[in-house]
Image 1 (spheres, rainbow, N blue to C red):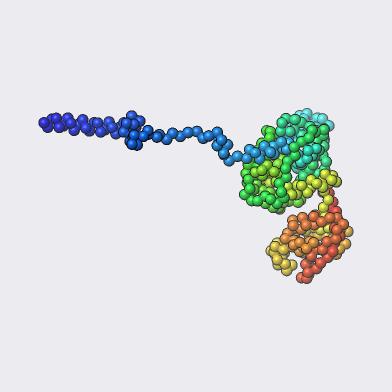
Image 2 (spheres, rainbow, N blue to C red; image 1 turned 180 degrees about the horizontal axis):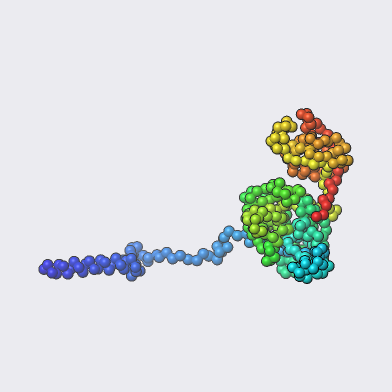
Length: 385
């Protein structure tokens, strides 16, 4: 009897162990153990593929890119430059060979541009086409055409081209001025490193960037959308595919994108573009003074607030400011009733005045406020580099 009980106990133990192994490794073998739901068929949940209609419900900016891509072009430039002045020197030629043997040689460059009118006007950066004697445009569909310079503005780094003998084009749509906000998604479109049309994405990191030393007149959009050499002059668009800026420069220690790129806002670009189209150049106000920002030490010595005004460091003889009585050492506090916070703001306010216009300039001299009426002159075009 004891022997039978021992056999029975061992059999039960082995059966339980086998059941555990099957339950763990092959649970489908025990489907007969599932409840019958009162005789109703067992419902087994099976993961199914998403319906076709839901397949495109993903985060995408394809529509914005497709709206803007046809209006962004590649710009190829070339210019003839004179050979090196030492090219005839035997020692020079020994080390550098005959690469400088010709009297002249051609240099090429590349960049991007944005079609702004159906009749072939293209907006780009001045530094993309500066000094070029041949300009070729390549469209996104592979077509190519020659272009000529309509006019440029080195101080804002903008230029307008006209495509010769072009068929009707699809221009880009301009976004509303001042509609951009920090944190908005933006796409940078251009031809980086000459690899072909490329779209990169990012957000608006900052607005109104100045004092960067890039242009005379600065009011940059900062973005982390990748901008690289060759993107200059290309489009910065919003999530609707509307133009918000012209890609211009990057901050980089390597020559490539480091997440700090700058674009000229569409409000400034449009204003400059319209003047260039109308007159071939840009006209700005000028009074002929040299200014510097107020430091806390200067502000204390002149008796003004540290964040107030710009110091007149010099006055050009015979200039509008000289004729009106402005003197070195004056602190300029306002232009046309608008407060001057620093030298850059002063420059922008004066440039916005029309030549020949008389404007009130608020000054601070010898501890007393002073107002002078100045007839604004025309800002001279900067010398060609």
